Image: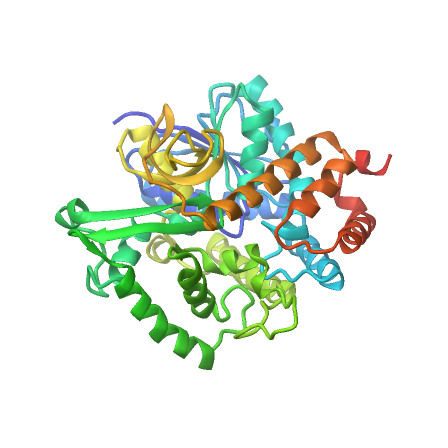
Length: 459
């Protein structure tokens, strides 16, 4: 059995990723005998994650070496992979972003990928990302840097534009394969609702193309055995949207999603497939204009609800680490995730396709080669190779370019500290509709988030 990789996790106590990488390292034959280096600036949280990992690794006898540090440079040397999954007071700043933007006429249901929330989170996080890249250049120059931090596309762009000598790509959990393809097949009736995998004979008949900027991706084509499945999916959406309007989830990212999705499909002829975010990327559900928004304008991100969810999840983590919940239960309840599956496939040369945020390279025929898109890719230790997706239809094409311009300007502003570029990014953003409000929003966010932003914004 070959030795597994060395994986360094920056942000080991991640709400979404910490437990999943422990599970993968503990259960994968390909990862066995490797090294897991866990980095977290919070000593208590790091200690909890280390204790959990030790218990699980002892249970499975996986032979994985465990390292831990509050300072990344102590453990990152010679890493094969570095996964960025950190955040700086995430919900605190997202609450500020949401409330301040709403005072200036912009509504955000997620507040971390587009609009003032996405722009200012990028301003906060990109300096950290590039500092990590500088450390990697010295200590692990041959590692793959995988960004798993929102705004995924903006941080991924920053790495590709400003750390060009390093190998990197970005990911998001929204298109985790093979579950993404499985779910679409079940929604279209290609597979029964209780199916757990996509058989090879179904895959041979399937033509499913999904592409776009992260959180603004669209199903461009869905055919099965030569049949267009869009009419089938539309009938499903009509039925689900009617129920959606009577049983709307109170969660900002979940409420009325099918109704929004159906309307966007009818407008553009392709399906927005990350609608909990996409509804925040278009101006139609902001409440602008004289006519009422149906079913309603998007609901504002509920930071307090997210805090409660994170506290509850962390309490469970502590129970596993303390042995109050058994390791056997942990191994049954949790599983791998997008990042851990990608690293396993790359290291083991499993030749599995995954959705990766990277340069287009011609996959979407009518977009630039360096457009930073989420695309289905072949993937191994040489990196992602996007697969052909076809053309982006007009209408959506223009919106894609607007979002990309906003993201590129945001990354450039974050690197340079140039207020003129920041202003341009805000005014290019699809949610901004007033110069005065944009200027006031920038001013108020800079004032409120001084302790989370680099000092060069205040010179």
